[in-house]
Image 1 (cartoon, rainbow, N blue to C red):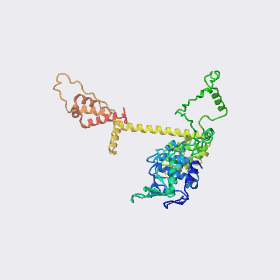
Image 2: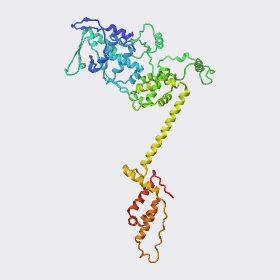
Image 3: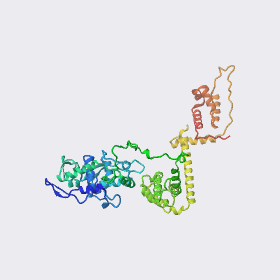
Length: 512
């Protein structure tokens, strides 16, 4: 038991009658079950400020009415100085919404220790949940919001009178109206403790050295931490120096030049050589068996899609056999590829347990595991190439000039027209008289026989996929004149051939 706890135990008054007829009693036990640790179900009252709440915290620490080990088999054994330090950080927050990382950084404790002390404060009736935080794997953690509570045992022990000013308000909003005479002295001492901040205890070696340096008759601090006295007339500067008039340089002597000839101290080099000779670990410490399990579990939850959101400790327990066998996460992924996965996963940890069953016995050598990794990489490369070809085909289909009709009937007609064009043979093309100049050219008129010859020549070219005759007529005489000469059927066929030829998805081949 620490000095603060021992002194506070003595300060708890025994049951006796007061001057004004009020009795002050000490309750035999203090424990709040989990169902009553919410603000809506709490029996205590909300503290008005952090100072009055710290009085209740010191009272609980000194009364020993709450003993953590009585209700839990792990964690801190007593409501001690560390719990008071955590409470001090909570008393400075408004609203009381601390994050675990914030308390770890402020107190220097581990994450598990901070959680244990927050649970102690809740079980002692000093904290109540307003909003319970959430922790989702892979996402930001939401901090819990607490209400600083004063338990009813504190009011009963010190004879504090409360009243509910608003009948419609909850019971935890009752206000203090007075205190019994027997509790005033104790309340004053608790106020002094609440005003004094509890510091982090120093290491044992430093405490022993400072205790020896203390002169006779100088007591230690109430918190069990030795206080180093400062001599009168001297004050330490922020960088650790002193403005004392006495100088310590009178008893020092310059080192020999032979020892500093190389510019390095020999003592430091000797220490380094001794440390290397003694086999000290200078690099990063190697993970043990439990650490490797958690490392593989954490990587699996990050790389496997159907394991995201699963609990890392549960995955570590499922993969303990392969982790103990020396598997890496790459080897585990290769094995999962060989086994295959279900289309719909209801419980990722259960599926992983089924897939990893007897895996360490099947791939029991590094060579087998290396072969599994090679096959997994080959399958990944094949899948990658397939995806590239699929994307390329879709891009050519949608970015080309030709768009496949949505109607099945139209697509059948287009396929039939293309097949008919491919089966056409190349006929002999008769040359048309191109020179119409000369005498009597102005009186020359094209008759129906000449139109028939031009249409026959254009049809012969269209059968072999050539549209130059119709195209030249359009460029030379205009579209209307070409339509008058060749007709709608030949003009439409020439336009369709040009569209098909420009498409990158179609290739026209004609027989000789």
